[in-house]
Amino acid sequence: MKRDRIDQVLKRFERISRRLDPDILTGEEDLEEALLSQLNHEPEARFLGFYSEEGLTRGFEAYGLFDTLRRRGYAALRVEMDLQDFHHTLRVFGDELLLFECRLRRARGCDAAEFAEFQRSFTPELLIIEWLALADPRRDFSPDRPRLPGQTHPGSGVADEAFVLLYLAARRLKLHGLLEIPERFHNAYLYRRDTRFIDPLFEGRFLALQRLLNQHSLCEVAWAMEEGRIINAADGEVIRWAPKPQVFALDERLDAYFQRPAWRRAVAEARQALTPLITPRPGDAPPSPCEQRSLKQRLFSD
Image 1 (tube, rainbow, N blue to C red):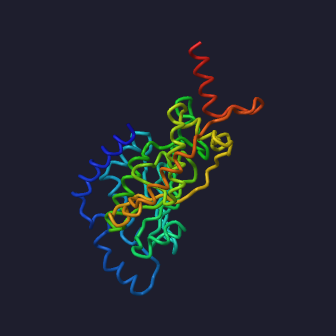
Image 2 (image 1 turned 30 degrees about the vertical axis):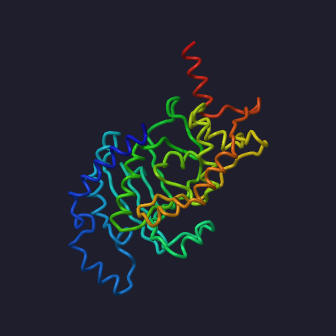
Image 3 (image 1 turned 90 degrees about the horizontal axis):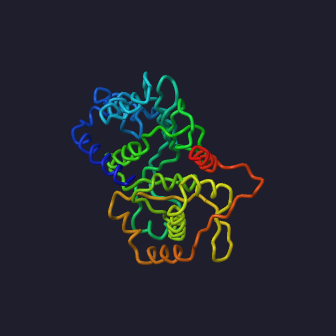
């Protein structure tokens, strides 16, 4: 279902993108000033070297992102850019509450060891997602939306839209792909759409871990990973999350890395070698948010 929704969002946003004049996003009236600033080596004035602050605001309006946030009760929506030398940060506020924040940078290639040989023949231009956070600070966690590891507020409900907008931005900038390093297992799963880990062993183990979702909720798996309660049934090894870069390829030359027989074979072998199992929590340990949810459901049903 999630993939179906992302596909629907992508189709709708692509139609809007085709009608959206690039001058609206860049602020054409300020183009001469921006070029002069570059020639004079002044600080960057555009997000990712392309989007003006007004252009981002008008873009979010055109794509309906602001309308979605208004329906959630937020007004006085505004965009803020923080353009540092090594990365650019974009923030969206509603009623002066932070609802969306992403830190991005453009980079040539990736320093992952598994990628070094491939990059000798082709070095991709990438949009690096260093940080992405979406939150609804006015909502509380509930039995239906329990807290996941690392969360301080429930999600804002626009994660799919945010992913598609990043995809469209990378494509508009003629980059070869997006790269992110998911901090936790559930981050990798929630933003998983045609993304693959550069390390084939990690990709295979990640695919194996997803089999747990056939019997457990994402919340249960996420907290079990956080608490070190996932093991390999074959040898008792504790499976811990070690963030690795994953890529969404926009160019067939980059996608060719993931189609190599050696990479695909290593993925299959790593996936087969891991049989993940969630072990019980210690009897004296406090219940996790998802276990609290199950308890409340049982009490209500009784």
